[in-house]
Amino acid sequence: MNLFYSNFNKSDSDIILDEIDSKHLSKSLRKKVGDIIRITNGNGLESKGKIIRLGKNIKVTVISRVKHKKKDLSIHIAMSPLKNPSRFEWFVEKSTEIGISEITPLITKFSEKKKVNISRLNKIIISSMKQSNQFYLPKVNPITSFDEFLKLNKDYKLIAHLKNNNSFNNKSIGNKDKIVVMIGPEGGFSKEEILKANKEKIKEISFGKNRFRSETAGVFAVSIINNYKNL
Image (cartoon, rainbow, N blue to C red; front, side):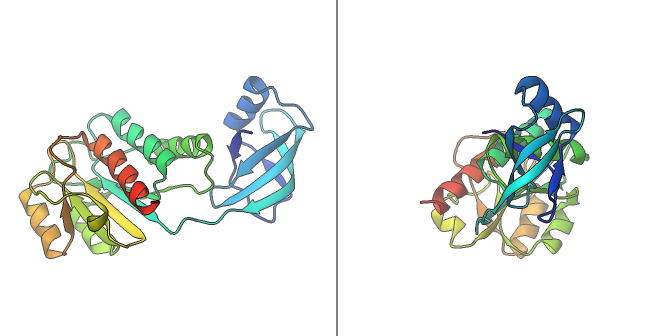
């Protein structure tokens, strides 16, 4: 059964769906009044409900609720916006499907693009969350400079670049439940940025001999962390 999204509260007895999901339900899936659907609020709550009104905004009355437990593991990728926005969007889509928790667009010395469309990224995340049958919506943070990110975020951080030979493996990931991986733009991080990371005792890692595109590196990192932590 397909999963839909609405920002509802656990006390709501009725849920109103947005135009996109309403159109998909009525036009593509051809749902009718009385049919049962599943809806999540992106905060772990799943409601089963009965359609009581069709139209531009379908109305559903709740018949049961389940609160899903949040995973202990938090994966946070801080990555430079890319020159081609569709590539960054691809990273957001695929990493959401795999199980990312948080994304920060990171402005570095060699970042060619300084902006991202946060609203569009959130729409992509919602779509990917529904498609992959998940119940927690990853968080997209505002654009943050490299220096500011070092000060603000105190979780266990790794910085990926080609100027080191430290393997990205279970040892580098360690036993932490909150893991941040910093990934630069096409030009990588500057020497000054790597030195600043060293001063903050951020662990340097390498993804191997292959030179990945930034978006590939991001998806690779999420996959590897999930793999090691779920063994």
